[in-house]
Amino acid sequence: MIDLHTHSTFSDGELIPAELVRRARVAGYKAIGITDHADATNMKMILDNIGPFAREHGHFFDITVLAGVELTHTPPSLITTLVAQARALGAQLVVMHGETIVEPVASGTNLAAIEAGVDILAHPGLITEEEVKLAAEKGVCLEITTRGGHSYTNGHVLSLARKHGAKLVIDNDAHAPKDLVGAELRKGIALGCGMTAAEYDQARQNSWEIVQRAMR
Image 1 (tube, helix red, strand yellow):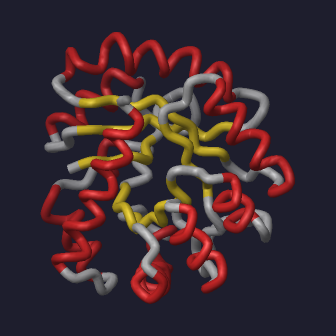
Image 2 (cartoon, one colour):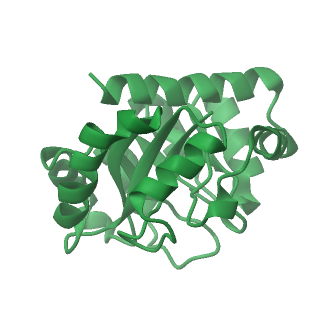
């Protein structure tokens, strides 16, 4: 298993990075992205700390660790600039907090994130067909999430991704130990929103490709 969307105490997660990584490894994960909530005020601080940890300590846990950010509640007009800044600061993974129906995310966030070329658009809510088409063209992965609330629109995301050929990944959006779901529940949630076994396997491959690209 691979999870490319998790949070530590550098934002609103319950676990310090070491415990987050250790618990993920014990739960059966082979790679993890630490993607704490970020905006212009804290992005450098996050990456200055998570970056060295991922590079210098991750292998001691027998798991691949990627340093990233989840740009969160960022005004759409700033997203392109912040994505570029994150990459310049060494982010191996840039996730965007999408327009989930359970939070007041600004309209236009999904489109701006896709145009900016984020790696993953997290919990994109009632994403439009036009946005999914663009995500497919630009290779932006759309997230199927195991997290309660955000997962309400998994079926909608899957349906449009299937129709337009957009890539999918499956993530936990983990904030606490209980969020690091095991393989059986993870697959059950994916199949429960309508994924086929083949689509589930492809989503796993999409995550692995992101990891490989980040580690180059």
